[in-house]
Image 1 (cartoon, rainbow, N blue to C red):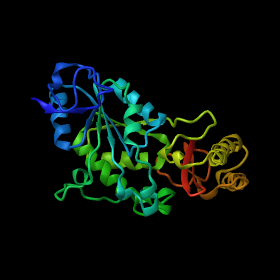
Image 2 (image 1 turned 60 degrees about the horizontal axis):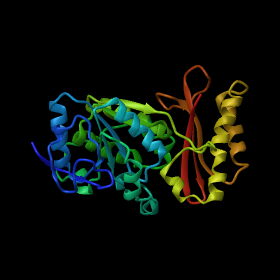
Image 3 (image 1 turned 180 degrees about the vertical axis):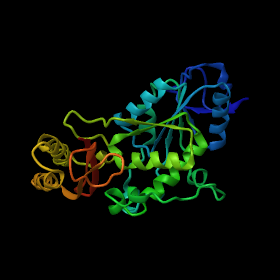
Length: 308
């Protein structure tokens, strides 16, 4: 089978843009391939699967940074092929201004990924992700979309579930990789994966941080240098919670942590300490838990968390 593949010349060592390439010609691709249609993607992935090869998948909304790259590098090392999707999903934005301002930096994204040897970047349009005829059926997430992000961003996780479900159906990966910075999203995706019976292993990867401690995020591109300094109070507050865990029960520590965070310049949306699996508020330290924070730094909404 031959498939049409678009590849950027700066990455290409064995093909030119718009040439026909027999995928089976090489065991490991020496170029990042850029694909826009799911038909092209499925043609390549069909050969991979028929050969018994593994596929790693990293879904993103673009504006890639070193945190994304860490996920992609791990997926590349652990699989025969890695697929990176870039799709700014309108269904998971409950704020139209936030959607409009979300960074779209495809050229810079491809530059960041140029050293990935066995990769495909899939950049679909909305009709490819949301076709008129679809097998998708929503389901009740229970408490997972009622607390924290779900409480403050109604409908957000409905959009996440829908887009990831459809991407999973297109890519059919062996493993899918997600960062722990979006801790609640990770819990939602795990439940979704089980509910729909996808035979996909969900891999959680640690949050990558700047030297300052600020969690890497695409939204950081919208912060001024002063705001990046102001945002450090998030990480400092999480460290405060960690340091004082042994001295206070969770409900008291939440109050003190909020007082600590409010000494800075951020506008707090929530600060909760919850069970790592159920995401229910904890009353004691008897089970594994996580502290999750969301706050506005200027007009930019930031989230972070720390396992306790």
